[in-house]
Image (cartoon, rainbow, N blue to C red; front, top):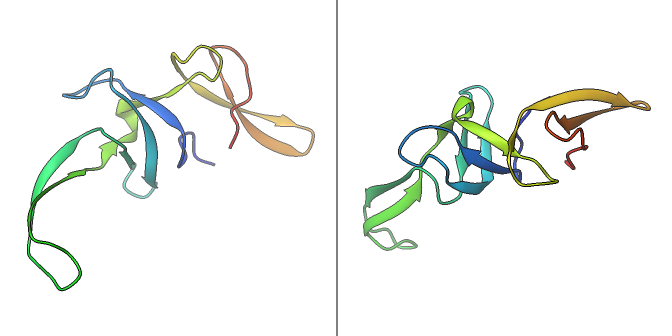
Length: 103
């Protein structure tokens, strides 16, 4: 089970986008990376195709999971993630507030 999943709200801990918040668009567990909206934006040259226009486009590049922290659902501050069993389900919870993270 992944600590950070698609749709989670995260904050960047280090790098050029430090402190910036965004939503996870895609997680790549094999590469230990994630794509976050509005974070690590790079410019790419794109060739014109029949269904896409050419030119220089900006898009989000993957960022390492170790540079991201989940936002606490209670106070929107960075938190670590833990796992615990609630009944027969394994759930993620915030180490900061102890609240269960929906997912």
